[in-house]
Image 1 (spheres, rainbow over the protein chains, first blue to last red):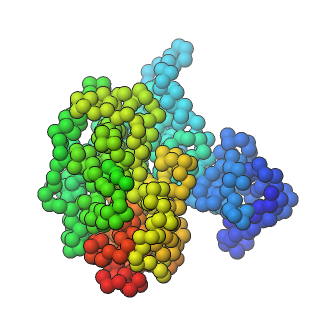
Image 2: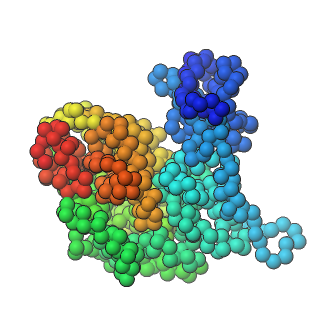
Image 3: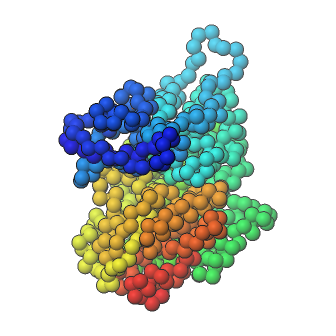
Amino acid sequence: MQVIVSVNRFNPQDNKGKYWEDYNLEIEENSTVLDALIKIREEIDGSLAMRCSCRSAICGSCAMRVNGHARLACNTKLADMTDDAGMIKVEPMTNFPVIKDLVIDQQTFWDKVKQVSPWLQSEGPDPKGEYVASNESMNHLAGVMACIMCGACVSDCSALEVDKNFIGPAALAKAYRFVADPRDSKSVQRLGVLNEYSGIWDCTRCYECVEVCPKGIAPMDRIMALREEAIRVGYDNTMGARHADAFSDIVEDSGWLDELRLPIKTVGIFNLPALLNFAPVGLRALVKGKMPAIFHHNVPNVQNVRKLFKRIRNDQNKDD
Amino acid sequence: MKFAFFPGCVSRGGCPELYPAAKKVCAQLGIELDELQDRGATCTGAGVLQEKNQFLGDVLNARTFAIAEGLGLPIMVICSTCQGVMSQANKRLKTDPDYLAKVNEQLREEGLEYKGTASPRHLLWVMVEDIGIDNLKTYVRRPLTGLRLAPFYGCYIVRPSDDLEFKLYPNREDSLERVMEALGAEPVDFPGKTRCCGFPLLTINEKNSVQMVANHTMSAKQLGADALVTPCPLCHLNLDGYQPSAMKQTQQDINIPIIHLPQLVGLAMGFDPKELGLSRHIISTKKVLSKIQVAA
Ligand code: FES
């Protein structure tokens, strides 16, 4: 099959900046994107820089953007990605500094992973034999431990795009792996750290990381589980936790959202500076006739909804 | 064609222009609506309630699905967020019988049981999958010729694509562009098309949220779009309502109108812009209307 691989190139040693270079090549039908890149490097242009090792989606070194989304080049079939003209676009991952061509600098990525203390911290003397943990909990953890640290989730993360300080989906998924480990005894402290600025509450819930993860780790789902757990163990005074609380209370009370009450309940009625912050937006909305109804109606049979909330809460409190 | 209609909270709250516009368009398309919230259905939880208690969120959505099953009607939504949250809950409920049974236990007292047959769909998908693009063209009275529109899907109607059954319905991927073309407009491909509007971050980190608004609206503008069109009222709240903040934060003039999908369809059907609530936006829609020679 004939393909055109368009590569976004960059060499810090020339002054060309970033530019696209197209490579035409003939390659076998069932080739991967990585096969094509290796063929280019070996037969057409030895100056093309990239990383790869295992070629089997295990080592995580070949992550790059193919047609605008992060993927492992070694488990992406070329034929699935080419357009009608037989072309694919290959770029280095975003949210990473580029060293050369498709090779990115992982330093910050690893620093952030280290920040979550990615090792088991148990308490008391070591057990005589092995640690005992239930099958169920280990099976659950296996889902996160399958992470190969390729960085695809970080590349496509919307929150990192606007804020380099955000710790990011890979480090947070790694943090979850230890918070959810029954052998770890530092979960509450870990959650306390993750609850801080640039931690679990700075994720914008866009699902980009879930979509691009080649291993099904679903980092965002882990971040949501960390939020749920942080609230459960008592970290309930962040803006995020208060927002979730206020939201839940309003739905419990009336069945649906009252958008006038939500911001007031979230920041607190006595928090004047924060309330004033909403004022210009509220005023603009008012002028345009966009304000939500002042009198918020309940859904019919709202008493059933309230009962549900109460019962589920009670059941869960009993389980704790 | 009849649906159990789930308008969501925002279409009657922060974006009150959306609900009447959607109802007008549906009536014109011959879509009959039975309103689920009149029958006691609640908010989906919008992913926010789920941060605190996912099980509770799943119970609330299963309850809505059970009410729709009782009516014998398929569910239609007009909000990408409702679509996503419902689809995710539905996947958990449909793929794990033990979990479904646990959820149904909570519904028993009310005499409800979710049997697992619901498949909520956005009006956007209904237009492509049930009405059909060719048929949709026959409703156009005022072709939107010359309008260059940037599609803004919002996250929850495109991701996770598995939960949204994109493999089964590959047409969902470019549904918004196809509807625009059917109405006579020209879609503008732009990098923000399926990115996050920043709304979920607004109360937590306003600066980051507003930066997302600035990035997407500016890139659409720079590519020559006259407006952005979105099937999600939460995206609208942020891209329209917080565009003044985005201009202030980034010190640039953006001023690009954000149009709800049903407003766009209604405009092409010949409805008066006022009836569609196009005068109720924070960023004026006048420029767009004058381009197709309609008085605001
Ligand atoms: S080369 Fe190892 S994951 Fe692709």
